[in-house]
Image 1 (spheres, one colour):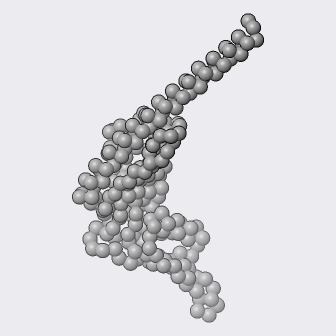
Image 2: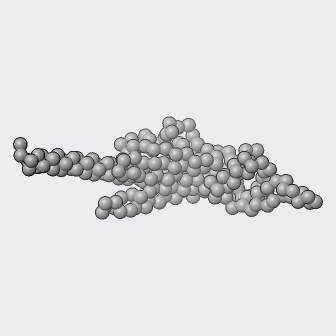
Image 3: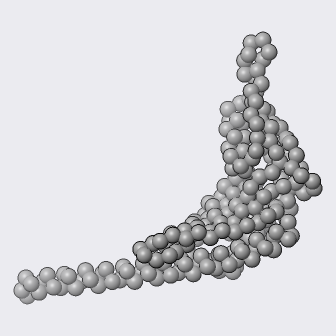
Length: 215
């Protein structure tokens, strides 16, 4: 075989490889977009129903000792954002957020005091996770001015959310779920091929702090 024919065979093999890679990428993109459509449609419908039901929320406490009043979930809202990927409009992320408010009456003021670094870190992290309105005050000894504790005053209202970010190249969807079982963030990845009504029902149960198999 001539050297030129060897080069032709090499070029042909590369073209076949590139074509297969492009086909795989296009298939993953289409599958991921289909999954995003399923998720967005489900969450829009779910938000409408839950805004009417206003389901109860799990127990909350900033320091693990001072309980909040009984809470409920209200004002569910969905958002779908797009971006350009290789000249095509695709989903950038899908989000649903809601407020967690007292079961009866308006939000009320609460307070906790901490005097150990691990407790302070935990409380500050939870304040950030819930995006709580709060004030911070240092409590010092009246004579020595030694720091005795840090007191946080806050309003009993926080935000919960789920955000789904697709990875079209890998055919995966990343779920970030905040404040459904207390102050916490849960993360999970699911293949686009796994997204269906059953899995979304499990996600809905998780968002309502009910037994589920989503994770």
